[in-house]
Amino acid sequence: MEGMAGIVHLQQVMRGMPEYERSCRLMTAETNAAVAGARRAGATRIVVNDSHGDMRNFLLDELDEGIEIITGADKPYSMGAGLDPTFEVAFFVGYHASVGRERAIMDHTYGGRTVYALRINGREQSEATLNAALAGSFGVRTALITGDQATIDEAATELPGIEGVVVKEALGRQAARSLHPVEACRRIEAGAYRAYGEQAGRPLYQPKGPFLLEIDWMNASMADLCVQLPEVERAGGRTIRYRTPDFQACYRMLLALLVMATPAAYQYPRP
Image (cartoon, rainbow, N blue to C red; front, side, top):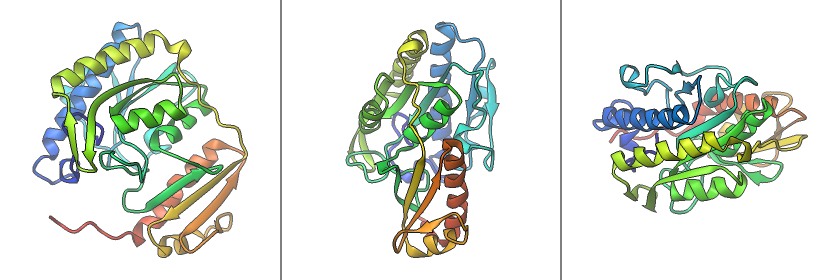
């Protein structure tokens, strides 16, 4: 949701805040635009996975009636739920940049209140690279990403050949110059059409194992909780490590560690 046109502030993406329902409408519209472009290029089966917050954000009755929808949290592979080798491509709509990225709207990597930095084999990761690698483990290409300029630049570096659609440019972490939502949808539909139609040239992202997952948490209490798992090592006051030859296991461990660390997170104050 953070990568949708016009969305710049935390209060716009939090359930219970006055602007949240409007953001759900924007998210639904941009998703429909990506669906329309893919279908126009020849896609026949499309599964949409709600991947923001509690993962119950879409206005279901306004989604394209031809899609299948995965909704709700605590599901296998989280943002990658539903992936399997029968799919041709994955689209990432409304994405944001990795934690610590300059001039990026609401930058974070999976855990906005927990993750200070996240690396695999020494390379900083974004949600785009993590989910592209998960898709690649099933043999699925990552064809499209939409979001702010920083997000698209980051994805183009790590996933060369991906179709990127810029819908806004950050002026700070919570301010941007944005396309009008209608124009953003037009560009997303066109980008999705190109992404699907030229899928052979899109990245099949399959990093080579073995994998060393390193997470720097926001505070040391989170590391205290995570090292209760015998396969997780302490690498510093707030840093943990996990080693595995299999990327899907790496991804699943990341999700488990996020659950373990969250009770030690500082809560956002109510506005």
